[in-house]
Image 1: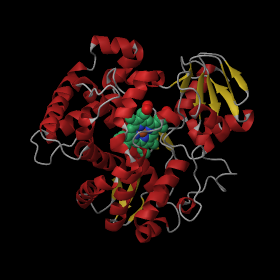
Image 2 (image 1 turned 45 degrees about the vertical axis):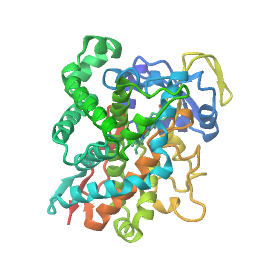
Image 3 (image 1 turned 90 degrees about the horizontal axis):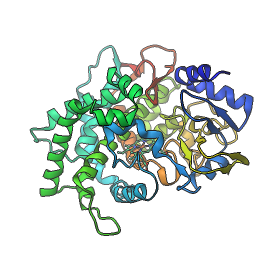
Length: 416
Ligand code: HEM
């Protein structure tokens, strides 16, 4: 298949493209997309383990995210590799530790409850934008620590929405693709959007420094690296935008898929209503298995390496394939079925290298526990308040939104 045809299929229908290639070519196969170096796609958990536990100095992830440079800034943990990445990551991990999550639950519950109470109760409703509004408010409150009475809250929310629209599409994205991220950054293509955002974020940083709370930003302000140095304002700004871009739409998309699958599963919504937060968490995990928000993670080889028995030259991209690992029948019997019960019970399915919606190793998603907490609380709030049914019986196909895979009709539901 030509490079052009592979690119077209990867963009239009990544799921079937990957499933067919796996069937035809086996556990390791090469695909060629756009102007990218060849990608060696890995479908077996043992190969995925080799990558996630492999030499981080030889397996760079930052390059794959370079397109986001103009928004995130050069200190973003998503863009760094090697020792500078590890320094930044270590500074950022403590606020996201599993045991801190309980402390954020009340805020998330209150935000979800307020939003859900305001949703229209008659007729069809597209959930995706509503869920994004919830997860954006969660970022503002719990991560940035913006106080409810802060006069800047409304403007900050509007400016960030505008910035996210720029990240996710529109004419400026074409400029970015044409010029490349470094030129776009130098030319300041996004400066009109970013300057007011930066000003508001620097105000929030100053406010938390003067009067810390229990939010993530306050903890980041207190963090010190091995030499006892705190993050600079510039670094804090870049990491706040990184947390927003990495965490806001991804979580809303996972929520949208969970609802899309639950309401098309016999008795699914009723079991959610009866099962409380435990079932809500299992349903979110099963949705992340069956409809992962990101189909692959990427690592650029810095030197020749042997992976899964294949000799790969420096410059190759290896792509642990989330979509394919999650469909293995020997791990997940009847893999195409949506069955939250897989993630309940004494020996739930889903292990370190067999359930990988958040990637792995030294690049594993920093917000994984945070996202699961949000899924659990927001779903349980929706279940308590709403009766949902599909607006149309047919399942929603998968559509691409830049790099994420979303329900094509935006998770359309009938609310009562
Ligand atoms: C369901 C929601 C989410 C999904 C599916 C998701 C998925 C991912 C994936 C696949 C990666 C790359 C991992 C790798 O390359 O091995 C990643 C990285 C990252 N995620 Fe998430 N994520 C989600 C939510 C969040 C949230 C809520 C936050 C923060 C508030 C967040 C922050 C990050 C950061 C900072 C990184 C970069 C880590 C690094 O490079 O060291 N994510 N995420």
